[in-house]
Image (cartoon, one colour):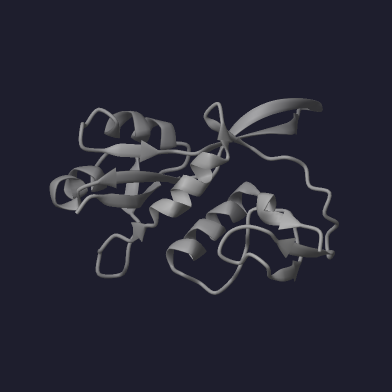
Length: 166
């Protein structure tokens, strides 16, 4: 059955794997990138980073493409359970990311929420709940959020765009 799955790639191989897999008609790839401003050698520059380093999303029929994708150079594994069955990624999660993209990139706006301050979740499945902003997220922690989402963990972290002051 054709669904979205998550591929774990070797470091900095996301674009290479994307290019290789897009050569096949029955495979779609979603490799979200983030455009943000960072200090590089003392200068503020706009840089592009993977939203989820070492992870890309692929839509395919596992009966037809599983073996080929699993052994594509640059792919470490298809994210799944201990028995080897891949986790199906909810298309709504990917649609939510696509909706926030502009010109092919996600743009993070600086937040004016103080650390430790109260926040209200204004969108998404946790709409209406209040919480406390614990910390800003780094790229490596975005991966943690992805894995928690796939494994349905109870730990709740939401997109900054979903926050409002209570």
